[in-house]
Length: 294
Image (tube, rainbow, N blue to C red; front, side, top):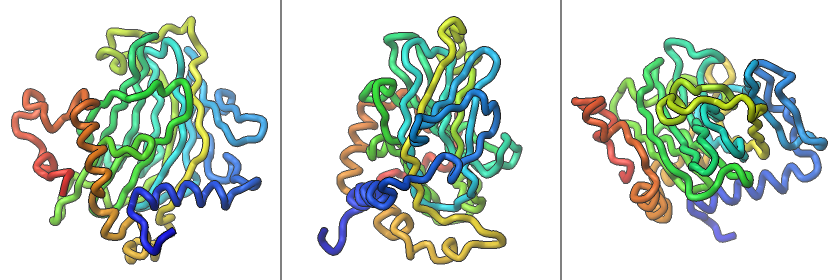
C-alpha cells in the first residue's frame, strides 16, 4: 500500500488487519463483554464467534463491554430480527453509565422493527449530560435481516459519525467553543440489547408486538475497537489523541468520497431530522447551525 491512505482506506485496512491478526485465535465474547441481564436469553454459536440475544414476553437481553473508552472507532456486525418485528428494538450504543442516569452521555443506534414486508428504520440519537431529543431516522438500502451488516461509530473531539457498511449516514459536529451538546468529556462503554418498545417504536406505538412470533432474535459478530481505553485517573492517549488515526486531521472531516456518499444518504434515506422539525423546536438547538460538510 502506498505511504498514505485516505480515511476510507484506513477503515478498510483496520478491518483487514483485525481479521488477519486474530486468525484462529479470535477473542471470545467473554474477552470483551459481560451480560447485563437475562443470561438465559443469550447464546453463542458453537465456535463462540456469533452471539444471539432473544426477546420474549418475559424479558429481553443485553451485553456491554468490560472496558470504557474515550474516542476511537467502534464497529460491530449485526443481523436483525426477521419477519414480523413490530414493537421490537435492537439497540447498539455507547453510554457513560450502565443505567439511564440523569447525567449520562450516549451515542445511539436503535433499529426499529416493523410488520412483515415493511422496512426497518434506524434511529440515531446523541445525549450530553442526560439531554437527548436529537433523533434522526433513516431508511436502509438493504434488508438488514437477511445478512450481517456493519454498524460503526467514529468519535473524536471534532465530530461523531454514524456509519452503515462504511457509508456515513449521520455527522454530528462539535463547535470550537465549550458547549453542552457535544459529548467529549466522559468515557463510555459499548452496549447492545433487544427489548420491547411497542409503546413507541413502530408507527408511534400503533403497532404492537405480536408475542405469538416470539422469541425475537438478533445476532452479532466481529466486534472491532480501535480507541482510547480509559484508565483512571486520566489515560495518556486522551491528551495526545493526534497520535491515533481516528483523531488526526483527516478524521476531523468527511473525505471527498464520504461527502458523495453522505449527500446520497441525505437525498434518499432521511425520514426524520430533529434539526428540521420547527414544530417541535420553534427555536432550533444551537448544534443545528453547524454544517456536517465542514
